[in-house]
Length: 220
Length: 220
DNA sequence: GCCTTGACACGAACAGCGTTCGCCGCTAGA
DNA sequence: TCTAGCGGCGAACGCTGTTCGTGTCAAGGC
Image 1 (cartoon, helix red, strand yellow):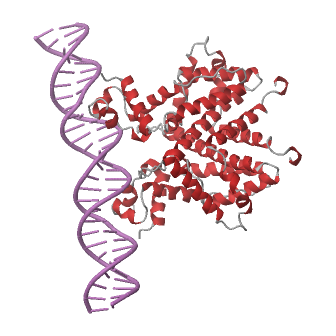
Image 2 (tube, chains in turn green, red, yellow, orange; image 1 turned 45 degrees about the horizontal axis):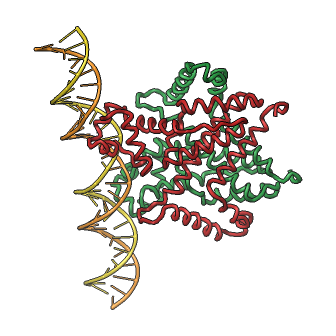
Image 3 (tube, chains in turn red, blue, cyan, brown; image 1 turned 180 degrees about the vertical axis):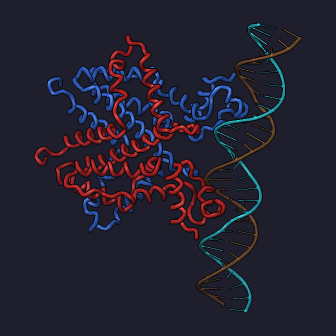
């Protein structure tokens, strides 16, 4: 009945319905009509359970089939972000861990292969993978926060509440002294414009452009 | 005796000595030899207290005096990262919030001014600020995690434990099938090389290079 | 067959958490 | 003098992760 796989399944279901903070050992155990102590025969502690949940999510990632490192980095980043975003704030579980599952390793291998073949130095390729992964997870997590953290239990749509937060920021910005913040005030529209997806795209494209400049010129 | 400023001071001291998770209303209240209920006359809840702590930290930031947006983005990012890192894992408090303190606004204004003057489109400038801020906070937070999360209470140095984590990863990677992961295995050194600072620098430089390519060519 | 060991299961309890409720004392203003 | 508002705070609520001790079962050894 119980087993680590079943426990991880249950925890992931809770993440999917209510987010990472809703996962308590009691909640998970309740899925099996038992108490939290029963889980400790299978997982060392809650941290380990959440790590296993994260591993489960990473193993969902479908690695795109691409011919250039730019395409793979772009498509892969989107895929990873989308995968995280299917699981509420699960992206937060990735901070500080090197992914070691098969999917992650396959992606790493393929990306390194394409980058090295294109003349990107190995160190640059390795750091690119690190930096982009961190950025993707941070964006996925913040995107969730912006969508959910404004849920104040009033029953109103948290996303709408998030929009109201940004509207409030824009209003407060608009009252800033023009003498001190002329550029900001003149460009409030741009400051508040765009969707999270557009911002994410922008960041990825900037990193790709920056890294491309590191590739050996005679191999581009 | 009590007051929001004093409460934020106390919470920040706890962050500085033991990290964000050590901040509980009881802990903060104990700094005043009282109980947690006493705090609620001054702060709405724990979330608000942590937001105020974050604002306090952001107000520490010293904005560098730079003549180009590249210099300012580089130096500013380092300064912000350093500021966060003086406060354990405080960087995690920044996710999902638009900074509205004086220091943050001054930095925004100066950076926008320099970027626009250099021909960077307003939308690009705005998104650059967003993306870089997110990256800086994520790096600061993950840097803390890597330094601290391995503290297992055994009294051994958590940073050493972190190094051991990475050594373990390298060992496990080294046992991967060479037929499936030839590039990864051939470049394990690069995968594991470098310091967190180097990685951070790399990410910032890549973003700067990518954004520079967005500047109007006749204004560079 | 009996005993031992290990694995699994789980109730009770511990020490902690954020927050609310109700009460109290003090001050300022009517 | 009375009232309202503010600040303070104890007790309690419902929740948290985890440990300890006990029980059951199966497998292996004697």
